Length: 512
Image (cartoon, rainbow, N blue to C red; front, top):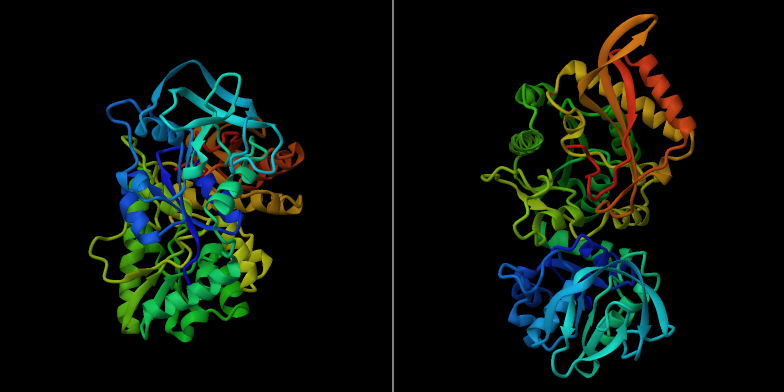
């Protein structure tokens, strides 16, 4: 079944993914694609409307990204957001220059005409601005439909041709009526039906898996996290016993994790799951490797090699299940211009070029909170659904520097104490992700009147729903005090604990 959909073309804004989240919350399917592949995306999706995202560039620069001609020739409704507005203005003959005053933060938008975009809104609303350039002259035929004290062209368009541009960001929470504006465009202007839900996704996913796999056999890495658990249930529902799950003990799992996952997934959920003890193989290859990208690639390559070996033992396995999520896809394929890749995702990058197994990625269209919702729809217990994410490279990227058995033992114990105290305080569900990190430094301390020179543990906890942005969690003093005291007293080799209060961006959630 083909759903009505919206195509979002990404020009590099840090908020692009939020546009997709807001539209999906309206029950309308959408995808985010790099602005450089507008033609292919339009042909593949056959969307009912196009949104041009913001971006860090100036449209008048020689190296600035631009929308392809297919966008303007499509006849589809188009909404330009921030940079997208300026791109629209430039294309149709307007003038864009640096403004005399930059505009960042809250602004009052005065609406001149509803024009479909501002239906059911008061004459004045609060919006969030983030721009230095501005439209100085409107293209012929365009008219102002809203303004702020600093931007006379804060919202423009030719409503009768379904072309709109807004200088502010409706996708962020700082624009309280932003979701209504997006709904007016998606449902009103584009006339999209709100028929995309987890229920429909389950049925469509099962049908798609059956068509793709046919009579084939699928093997999959099952970590016990929500992503792999949900993916495994979908595969089991679609093809039954022809799905074979493997839990790889790669030597960098958390304390008692392998046993807990086998109990929860194999015994309780009935997943066809086999435990593979491959710790020595992984740790051998990680010896003396401190670069985080190299760690990720070594672990990714070793994973695939192990799975190919298991496939040969099973006989006839053609497919590999992976729990790739939409944020992984976005960070890997979105438009970044000249900027460098932040990191390689184990689900997307770092795979062997000659891998013999075809990938099955049933969750690659979903954000993390959508996967949790899907898990509940599939009947998974809350402990599995709300388990904090754990990266594929495991503790290897939470140990900064070389990975050794001794350092793994220290981090495992510290992490277990930290999570135990968070759960005791009833805060686990309030936190998107929490974990301990072993730093590559030692510090001076005093224990029992003796000088010590030992390891430093950093504690991390963030609040997030989509894992593309995250704020540090304001952990209560009592929890931090107890956790730090227990770690220093119970974990040999640690004499200092610190708490990470950085948000994403500019930091990432993981340290490596």
